[in-house]
Image 1 (tube, rainbow, N blue to C red):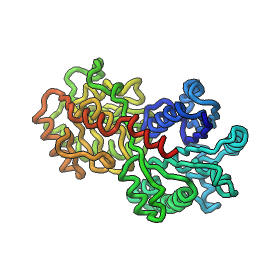
Image 2: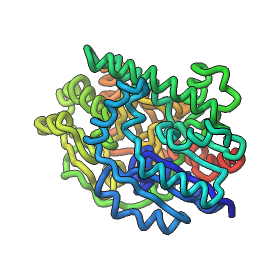
Image 3: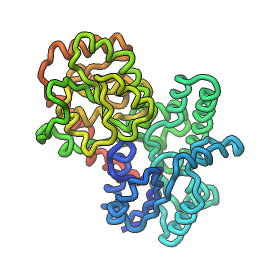
Image 4: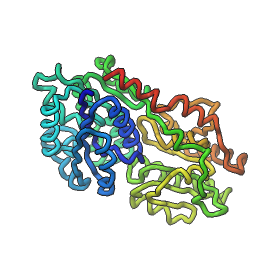
Length: 401
């Protein structure tokens, strides 16, 4: 088998959050067709326990420790060098040396880059006349520069200026590396279309591979013990709770929507299920009807026994795995349009979609009034199985490489 270099900004295991779910399935697929050499950062000490899982899949591996606090300090170099702050955040001389050695030792001519920031380790090869010998595919996943633009809209003062700067500088970098690469991929047709609109000259290079869902794992046919106390009418949100769009989503819902629901349905509980809850999220638990669980071993029991799943994201790019996983388990989902971006939904599905707080309160009231027991919607599950299976989506990757 041919050799392939796979670079990821975060270790692609365990597949328990959006980017790691995608990177793991890409890696697993590629190891069935190539001798894969994996280079990845580890920004959570708990993830070191999983390296044996990836060592067993890959031909060679290199894991680079990343301390988030120190990396933030290092990222400030971007103000001096005139680059996006995200780039020095991930700079590593040790990883660069491993990459150089691996490419030269194993005569690698195929590279898959997961996340645009990892392209900085390959651009030296592309800018020194070796581009004809190196096929590079970049999985941007999302248009990250646009996510920073959305962040800026929610901020004021110096923070707003920093986010606006990051959006512009990172977009300039995205343009540069997309031009150097053989192809650029995104997580959805909509995300790819956005980048084509922003960079029309690169349109022919831009494609997409939809995220997938393991529908055997996320299945309503499995039996789970309820994690909820008897009598609780649970609304559940799942996701990494140190990720600002998730923090913003649950905070907004808790402040603007949930109090109106409690007035009419006092037994309703809002469960925020996910690792590393920020102080802002933990503060929400001062309300006795809001439960912040922190990390859980398995999110499926929380989804399976919830009244419904909610995804009130106001800042979002790409496809929300939390929505697809809940749909795969046959749950009704209440979401904002931003959370549904990249998922081609229609009125036939068991979804309630609302943008403003008043509209979401009405949607939720209607659902709670008309549906006393938790319902299972096989329509949602069938939709996910048809549109978001990993196997059919990853076949596109094989054709590209």
